[in-house]
Image 1: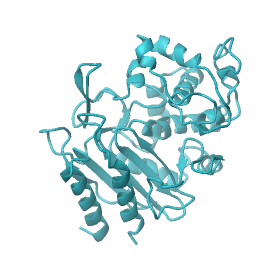
Image 2 (image 1 turned 120 degrees about the horizontal axis):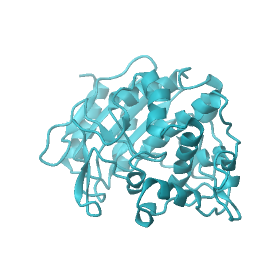
Image 3 (image 1 turned 180 degrees about the horizontal axis):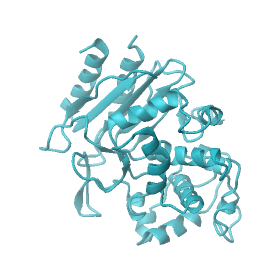
Length: 345
């Protein structure tokens, strides 16, 4: 075991020992190489040990691993452009509202500057997928231009993907992104086999294992633009390496580079298209660079990519098992992990 792998193993073992996480897997590497998958803990309390094959609920990593590449693929194919308005695809979005969701652009949705609220309990107001989508598409718009990280915006992007392709997002993402890249263990749920449990959900009256944790994604039958994806560390390493090499299967290099540059900033946060860039007290650690980009997921997942320094790091955990109150030190675990990987040289 090399020194960096040993440091990462120690970080994960300590997080499990202090009950920050029931279990976790990690992997890191460069454009051309990757570590073995590093494992610690169990898939659920009193359950089997995690392995390289354990799939995790990726939560909001769905935004950059499914929705973003689907949108970029459609841009590359000429089916839409970043400055198209929502109303081009869904004419009744924001109907009878001023300002209207219909007037927001795909670029604004990707940069979280559309004016949409961060979140609403759509699952508590609706009982089926079609009604839930209709509910989101009638969302009120606030101040456009301000950065408000919004699940509702990415649900809207998922609806546009489905409108343009005629396919549900799980099908299109598999055909356009996962299969071409060889990400055979990545997809929307439900999933079976080796999968990490998430919350013991009082609303659904069951322990969630292989079923999406996010309530709004669950109401959308587990397939949404903001959450719903499951995957393994190795598959996310494949995805990260595709971004490091500007892999043509994701889209033209110029479009990929456009996605990871700074589009908006507000003094604390910097955002590309979908991607979160390094900001103050970033989860990416003290040694990340201004060119770095990544994302986190509520369940305890994260992905970080450094194009100039040539490294990536994937950390997957189920810190929300058995309760979402778990993992209060997750931010520190992520920073320590990235600091270890960044100093691998």
